[in-house]
Image 1: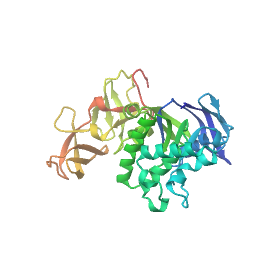
Image 2 (image 1 turned 180 degrees about the vertical axis):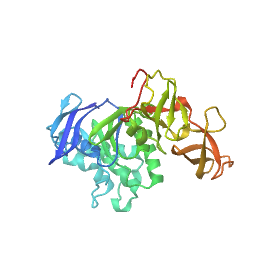
Image 3 (image 1 turned 60 degrees about the vertical axis):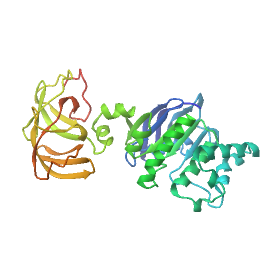
Image 4 (image 1 turned 30 degrees about the horizontal axis):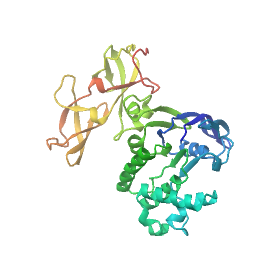
Length: 359
């Protein structure tokens, strides 16, 4: 195994710059997920690591080797594509063995590697079938098995679950996590699905417009987002952002004139300064508490014992997630509290405000 280091990676297609100086470190054995909206450059970055795209500038180091100029076959990587890329005329066994045969490995070694990978992925019974006789999940396992037999230093996954239905994606996420615990191979995984990122990653790298917005553990990015983009990209439903103005050392005024208490964070903010207040749906409280403000329930999504309650007020619309006891009704006016300890504060440029910041 080996770690991965990407330094100031830049990639242009004609006059369009897709990667704008991306620097990333993936520790040996770490499962790192690159996440971001479509067109942000995440797949281009992964293909550059694989050697399928040539960087315009920058370096890629795997272990202690600079592989920037090396062909894919010499980089010690194995890549699993979104489309599986299986040969339809070959059996599962032959698909998994193909790379080792090209590398002229001994037949006994190939057989042993295929058997081991099939056992890990529980596909021994499929070895003599062809891809047309497999389900989507089975094809994905075969594609992963083909990568495993190569015993790479680094696994690269390019949106491997996007072609599967919702239930199968959930099951495959569990299998990916289990596989990584078993093999402990350094992994770089690209997805646009923030649920995959949050559930699989040791560390998440959020890309936007060819640049890194923030990198850190899933909990760190969820609880301490660097800016509004990261805050709203991670979490379902996404974080609510309310426009406000500082009206005191510990309070802000919303657009409709209502006052919200701010967390005691040591922030030194000037009265009258614009502010964006963020809060996640699960942190919104409904009930008669000091500082609660009235909102009208516009719609309730009931999911068994849970409910997402959509609230309409002069400052905007909020969605609150809570246990559903059946007592709430659409059209009802309820007191809503935004607990100060759960608020996220952002400046007028959308950058998170931390203790000691002065505006």
